[in-house]
Picture 1 (cartoon, one colour):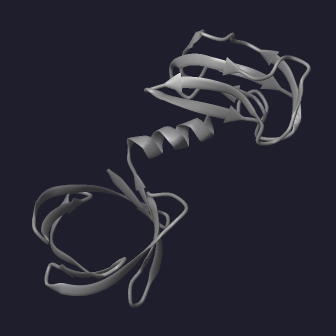
Picture 2 (picture 1 turned 120 degrees about the horizontal axis):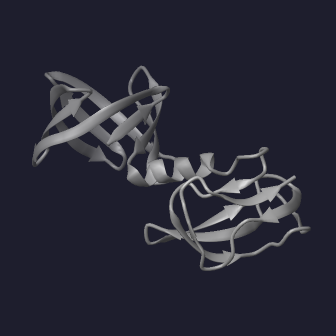
Length: 167
């Protein structure tokens, strides 16, 4: 998995773990760590012989944290397959002008909640796609008018396929 700390992204692998001891590989370099929770969201970390106290404050979702040390504070995010999917889906909302919606990956159209000529509001759900055993709602990124719906219910769609065009 990858972990983003502020603007830096590191590739992190848990190589082994026994009780509180772990061997962690960060960007190809191995570290020995002894990690012990001393109270809720506060950890004592012994990393290659150096001691740190770390506070983890949960963020907006289960994969985002504020990490506080004695001297520094970091915004952290765990970037796993689910996070990459979410990020790709958010990127896929804009094509052919900032308002159109595309499918970030192959899937099946479950429901279309708009038609050409409809005025839609920002945040309004326009289409629901099933992909990877999950249903995803695609919402209007801003107010606009639907000019074209390029799919119908039960259609199979490809990744990067334009679903709805708005102006």
